Image 1 (tube, one colour):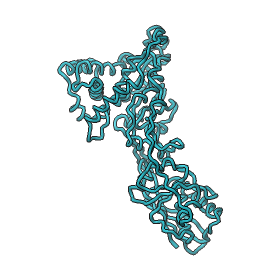
Image 2 (cartoon, helix red, strand yellow):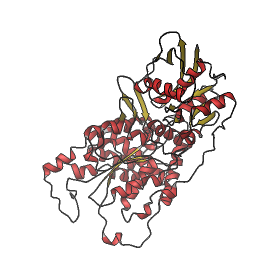
Image 3 (spheres, rainbow, N blue to C red):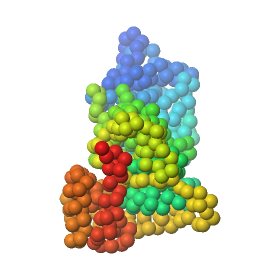
Image 4 (cartoon, rainbow, N blue to C red):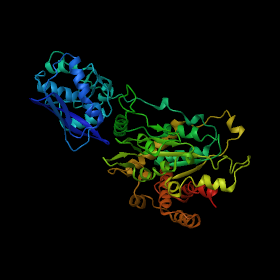
Length: 508
């Protein structure tokens, strides 16, 4: 006796179609699973056997062979429990209905309950692409599954509900619901709370307007973390495509909060400086997204930047340049998107007071050099904006004056982003920071005065070719904020200012 049931699997960011084939033949009772299963898939035979028996179905006393095709792709996790059980019950004749147009995903408990699993959203999108009529998913994943339209999605709590629906005894209602576009502005921290620091706020406004990475350097207690945590409040709202892609990532990583349809608020990730390189970049025996990818379309804040493991910091190189991170393992090579803004914060020296206007630094020159050397030149070169965060005096802290709100700053950021969307229409580029060298040359045309200033600064500061391109892109963003078609002298002068702080703190 032979039967098959459709299912789906996850590989990196993509899903793939799976066919679970069950063959029952004469011989000594045995249950074999083939098709490159991992340990969790091999253990399915015990869960399937117990759930079939405990649900009072007839478990076949024969040789059972289950093949999970395609056989050359590694299958991971317990998500194949349900399709294996369905294929076995179909092969024994206990399911009479035609199941060719259905797909099944879910982990089984020993009493037949269906438990939630990760990666449901990309699986459903793949099922719709493959014209599968309906998919049975765990009830716990119903909210996430309700995003996908154009396909019937049936949330089920146990194996009985699946069989009753297939037999026509008790139909299940599909779980599609319109996505609720909720405003997240009220949930975010506001720049209105930050007293003073107008230069730092201006730099973060430029960063948000152009999608630029930045590093904040300043003594302890000057508000670096406070500023970084408020950056998402001035970023443009996420488009539906960005929401969908971010939700897919969180679904695959098992990080999607319970009851959430779509992630509509830009991610803000703040990993501790003790994080491992694998935790930051992603990986593991079965590769999973790391913090860099979980910050996709949002912000990753790296406080105490020099304290991070050097290999973890160096893992930023590829995503900062390419907008994606590739994880190579012996079993597979996967790529995850990482279109993120990196915001780093650090003290200027181990004691934190080098360059402080009133407090004296107690560090030796050797200690400062050792501290500086924890961050490589190539990483600093890849960070667009270098921001000095100075101490705030008492008068500013105690002032009753009104500070500019995030909503007011966001209006200017949105205008600048709208100019960029129009500029890059028809391309994959979303903001100035992501421009290719060819685009930089095309869209960053300088006036004669601005060109002369940049040439003089390039020679005097010893800038790299990468720094030259980044100054042009920053200047382009500043011009966009002022709704200026051309890049003028003042725009370049301000852009250069954000590329010279490393000379003040780290110059020999």
